[in-house]
Length: 275
Ligand SMILES: NC(=O)c1ccc[n+]([C@@H]2O[C@H](COP(=O)([O-])OP(=O)(O)OC[C@H]3O[C@@H](n4cnc5c(N)ncnc54)[C@H](OP(=O)(O)O)[C@@H]3O)[C@@H](O)[C@H]2O)c1
Image (cartoon, rainbow, N blue to C red):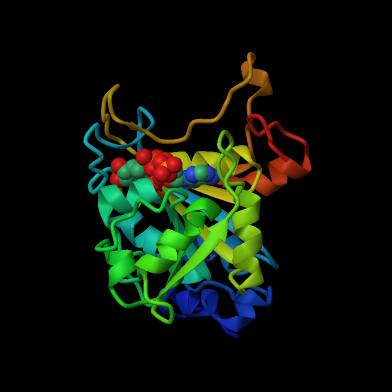
């Protein structure tokens, strides 16, 4: 394959050749080079792979105090999110995001296929009118075993909403590894954990993420904004998690691409790893 422009680079990133870990084509211009550099590690990740994303303010918030997250990061980061959705088998959000944002979790800003949608909702408190549960497209509703029967009663058996019962410890909640195992059993091996802060933090704390894309916008949402990442920290800064990172400009925002799997391989601390 000769040098590719941005359109051909994006087509290659979504191709079976990329998924099989094939050699990246040479870029014909800077735009294609940026796409291949940013999305190459996601598109060519071998086997099981979990990536999380958050868009946050300079002061570490992912939404305002009322939960409004619509204009935290800019249009380029929204396109970035849709590219990530197009590269994974499944996109997972916590119920807080469903209640607050009512997202569709589909690919609209770029060319690409929609991923399977997964809602992590142990207490089955997502409204059945939420778009992700009512738009007729397939979705997996992960609820605690204690709420499985009620959730199954609430949805039609052969409809697009699949109830998946997961063990949920009263204190520790749902084990993120367990969720990823169950999705992998269904062929959903490449997963984007899209938010919100509590869900991504739990996956990070459990050591269940291979990469984290953290887009930082030049905006301040205030001390009472909705907190993004929250993992236990060390006493000394030198002991803090400092994974290998790359940065990319997304309009006015800066995306940090953090290689958490590499940090785990080298034994860097990830909060209080649970397993
Ligand atoms: N800027 C961004 O990138 C971005 C992205 C997504 C969302 N958001 C914003 O983030 C806010 C929502 O975030 P959030 O942190 O409040 O909520 P969230 O992460 O969307 O959902 C958290 C809830 O999901 C359930 N949950 C998730 N992981 C669990 C686990 N391992 N075990 C047990 N339960 C688990 C719990 O439900 P229960 O409470 O029922 O136990 C938990 O309270 C909204 O304001 C939204 O707009 C921003």
